[in-house]
Image (cartoon, rainbow over all chains, first blue to last red):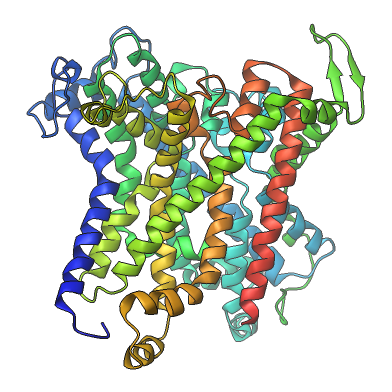
Length: 283
Length: 293
C-alpha cells in the first residue's frame, strides 16, 4: 500500500467482507435449507441458521427415491452420469485439440489453413444458436439417450486448439531438430516431447473444461428423455417443477448442493490451474 | 503460424486433424447450414409440404411485435447484467488490490460462484425469492414491499438479472484484479507523492489503465448474457410472466421445441449466429490491437 491510513485499511476489509457476504448468501441459504426437515421448510419465516437434519437429508437424497410423487432416477445415478459427461467432454476436447494443433503447427500440408478456419468457425456456433438442426442430426445418428450423444457433439473446441497452438509455437525449434537428429518420428516427438512440455497447460485446461462439461444444461435437456440418462444439473429443474405441488425444499436444496459441490471443489483446490486456464483460454 | 522446421508431408497430418474436423462438419457446419436452409422454408401445419420462400421468415420476424419485444428485452437484460456484475466486481477488485496480506484469500472466497451451473444459480435465487416461502421475499414483505415475480414482469426481470450477474461477478473480479495488479506500483506511488488520494488515484489512473480489460469484459459479459443464461431463465421464470423475460435464446428454444415452428425458429437461429459472429469479430479485433501495445 502506498500510504498508511489505518481507517482506510479497515474500511477496505469491511467492504470486501460485505462483498463476500453478498456473494455467499445464496449458498448459505441453500446450505441451511438442506439441514432442516421437510416440515420446518414449509413454515414462514424460513430458518437462517443450520438445523440438525443434514445427514438424514443427505442419506434420503443420495439413496432414497428423491422427491415423493416424481419418477426420477436415483441421485447417485445422476451424479455418475454427470461425472461421465464432464470427464468425457474434458478429456475428449483435450485429446482432439492436441492432435489438431500438432498437425497445424508441425506439418505443412494442403488445406492446412482451411482446416484451421473450419475449427475457428466452431467458436461462432454455440449450441444455443443451432439447437434444432443439431438435435435432428443426433437423432438421425441414433445417439439420443446415450453417453455418446451427450458428449461427442460438444467435443470440438476452437479455444483448446488455439491454446495448444500457442503453446507449441513457444517451444523452441531446436527441440524438433534434435529429436529428428536422434531419429524420432512425428508421433514419438509428440508423445515424448510435446506432451510433457504442455503438461501444466493440459491440467489448467482440464479444470476449465471439467466445469464446462459438468454444467452443461441445454444440451442434455434436449437429447435425454430416458430417466436413467439425466444429469444432476438437469434434475434441479425437474425438482423445481415438482415443488409447485409438494415442496420438499430440504431435498431439492440438498440436491443443488450435491450438484454444485464437485466443480466448486475443483475451483477451490486447483485455484492456480483454474486461474491459468481461464486467462489462457480467453485470449 | 507454422514452425520453420517441420515434418515432411504425409498422410499423418490428415489423420491428426480428422477427428476434430469430422465432429466440426457433422455437428457444427452441417446443422448450421441446415438452419440457414430451413430459415428460408415454410412448412404447412402437418409437415407434408414445404415451400421455399426466400426471406419471408425473416420479414415475418421483424414485423412480429413479440420478436422485436424479445430483442429489446435481450438488449436490456444483457446490458443490465454486464453493468451490474462489472461495476460490483470493479469496486471489489479496487479494494482487494489495496490489501497486501490476504488478497489471495479474498480471491478464493469470491471466485467460486464461477463453478456453479446457471440453472443452479437460478434455483438458488428462485428459492430465496419464492413469493410464499422465500427468505428475501419475506424480508421485503416486512418492509412493506410485496414481491411476486410469478405475477409481475418487472420483478421477474430483476430477479433473472440479479441471478445472472451474481454468477458472473467471479469472472469479472478475477480479470479486474489481475489487470490492477499488473499496473506498475511506481505510477501509483508517483501520483500519491503528488498528493492524489485513493479515490482520485482510482479515477484518474487505475480506471483508465484497466479500460482494455473493461472493454474485453464487456464483450465477454454480453456473450454470456446472450447465450449462457438459458438455464437461469428456464429455472426461474420460463420466459414469463407474459413473456416478460423471454430473451432471444429462450425464444429460439421455445418456438422450436415447444411451438414446433421450424422455419421461424431457424430464422431466429440465423439471426443469433450473425450476432455471435459480430461479437466474436469485435473480441478478436480488440485482442489484436492489444497485442500491438
